[in-house]
Structures are given as C-alpha cells and as structure tokens.
Image 1 (cartoon, rainbow, N blue to C red):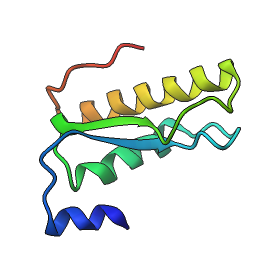
Image 2 (image 1 turned 135 degrees about the vertical axis):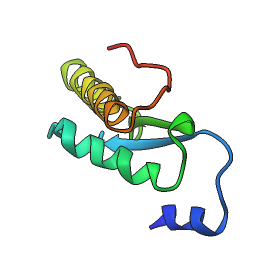
Image 3 (image 1 turned 90 degrees about the horizontal axis):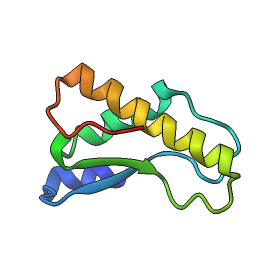
Image 4 (image 1 turned 120 degrees about the vertical axis):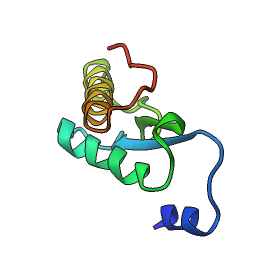
Length: 92
C-alpha cells in the first residue's frame, strides 16, 4: 500500500525493501522473494532498490538467518537476470 505513494512522490534515493519475513520460521521460496523485488521495481529503479530481510534477524536461529539471506541473494540474482540489470552482483 505505501509503495503507491511513490506514484505521487517519486523516490530519488536508495530504498531497502524487505522480501523475507524475519518473524516467521517459514522459509520463503526464491520465487516469493523475487516477487517482492519485482513489486519494488514498479516504483524504484533497479540501481536504487536494495533487497533485504524485512527487519533484523535476531529472533531467528543462525541457520534460519543464513537461509533467509541466501534466499534474498538468489532472488536478487533471478530478477537481475530477468531484467538484464547491470547493478552490482550480489555475492552469496
């Protein structure tokens, strides 16, 4: 909902967008996280969109945290391949 504000007020800075839920033990799929990135790209250009977990990972185990971060990285790679982005590649 809040992303619609960018239609009226274009965002000119970098924007970190949460694409995995840190309050859940459930691991999102890469496709689910990629969809979150695609939604963000409707409002912010690829060179300014920074995919992230939706908050800190303190409440998750180390294994869950690493898995969620890997999902974000793989989702970013997937979307970059789809759009042919020249954004700096992410290192897993």
